[in-house]
Image (tube, rainbow, N blue to C red; front, side, top):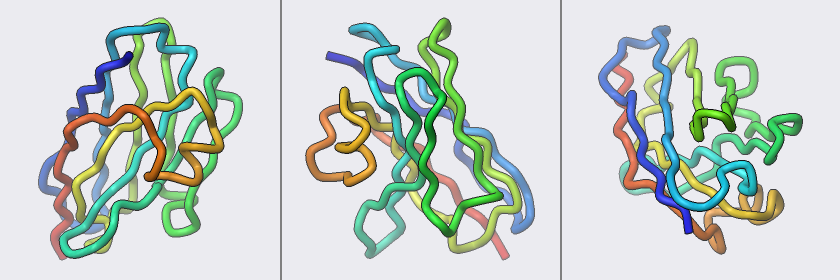
Length: 125
């Protein structure tokens, strides 16, 4: 089992940047594919980006390509989401997620085994 704790959310103006972090504890961090999901008010939770166990493979949804960057540090048991050129549409609660299988994360959120409690990102216009 793995426990996930997100941090770094907050209020930012459109065009600004934020860096989210997700610290993991529990079983071997490098055994898990990781992902960031988000859920805006009144909407379903959706995948933003996923990263493979080694960090060599990433998957971004079209709406964040070129603006968001995911990375992981397996030595620190931490995954990061650098968010640049933020837009009001990026406003949501952002969740860190982990699963042994990359495909499960990419097809998520259903079936993903482990979740953090989320961190709120608000982008003002």
